[in-house]
Image (cartoon, rainbow over all chains, first blue to last red):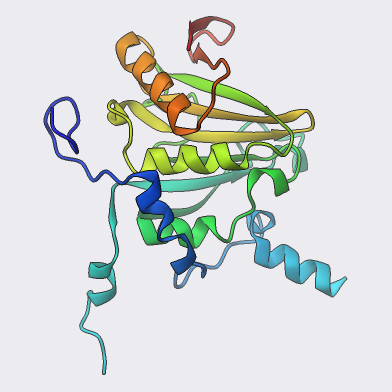
Length: 55
Length: 181
């Protein structure tokens, strides 16, 4: 078995932790066009920050 | 000058699978059946999309008590009733309240980065935020495949830098602890 393969020899897109961490600071905005609905907004920092400011 | 169509996509790093974040706060609807308050947040398929979401979502230590936060492969619901999960199991680790953030991130990175030899056996992961602490669970597809389960358990412990015991529970028989790792 080679690096980048599952056991059956199928190639997969593998990324190490260190490689993935390099992109963290480049991606700080929510995905384009994505607006969380009210039933999930408590998970998002931006909504809770604005909520605190408004009270 | 205008970028050609698809230019942005081509600069991104595609993941092997698409993954969906799910959010559930059942404490807000105590009368409802389990799972009825679970909501998909967003399905991502690139490294960049992952961080765009992760960087804007609270880490487990900042989520409200009672919340369950999931990251599952697209089209697999984080429910034992889902056909893909029905014969699987869960590796789990319990951590003190507020101490799971790094383990949760490293679990996500190991999953979306396909760092498991038996990654095709993985359904997703969940963090349960509770008053006494947080529990991270790694859901698998086929609990009867002991070789795959043990490999996943060992590689998960290594990926989250965890030295303590983790246990595996078979979904079909929740009271039965099948493996220790």
